Image (cartoon, rainbow over all chains, first blue to last red):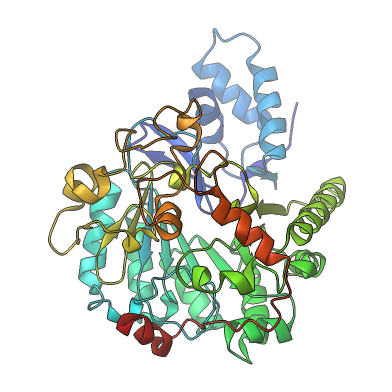
Length: 88
Length: 375
């Protein structure tokens, strides 16, 4: 169980960009285009759900995916080093 | 900056709302003859520009100038830009800002405020900005920006008069809780080119500043401090030019106060015709105008760029710098050691070693701008 509750850092704004055909993170004078799995995770980050709840949602949507829980954990470690998220 | 750009889209729209500014920084990148610029775009004209650029893929919108706070309709422009889905950046000196206005911008949806400083102390700041009260006002506004929860970037243009205080500058930024700090070594365009002799630091000054910045980076990272220090080296001390604007007409679109559209904010100085948003659609301007197509690709290159195996790395460098220094905008940027004009850069470096304390600076104001018009 991972009861930590992530939220997107105030510095960043998550947004669907039609022109990029992708989810992006916008920040002061810059933009990062997210790949499909990063977008699946980050669009579920709302400052309320725990990491375990996010994992459960993803497992329901992708029951075949192997090592999904570990991938999500790794993503959050990485996202924190990039300052994309903070914990509530 | 932008990590992905598959197609040629104007991802970054810089809206220079006005050339009016209460400060007179001698390194301003505005054109020398700004006093001759035509009438400013109206609120409706700006909103139309934002709408068109957004459709073409623009995601970042910078409100700049001059001092954008001079525009009384700024709040309306911010609200409309945010509604269109832009990440909105206010690039300001902080002069003309107050707590109430910061709050109104927040309500309108402003995402980020960048405050520019001239120095870390009042005396130097005053000398450079031409304003006695500016420094205290900037400090107050930077604190207010953070207190209201905005991400904040602090921008210090560094040069020989303030670069030796880099440690104090960084400490001030930490104290003010900046998220990003741009330690942007002055680039020599516009007014800065006029004042180059008085502004260019020596190599020793530059190397010291870079070393101190790196030491702070390590120390702050070790403390788990989230602040990011961005150090921009002046290309006068490089042997290869910068890939200017990440390519001409690839990513950036500047619209000047009178509606002239440019591939970069300096390009107005070039002997090219640039289209105006009052006369043409942005789509025509970006895709079909001569001004935006002129330096796209590599067909325009002369030797040594034309046969250079590094031509894709820097695309021949900056067109404005080539034009200002050599008189021909098709030449290699003289920063490149392969350029036959590289000696001009070497001479400027050498001149920086001399004592220039008595060199007078030309301040950026309406009166001086009119002198350039006559000249």
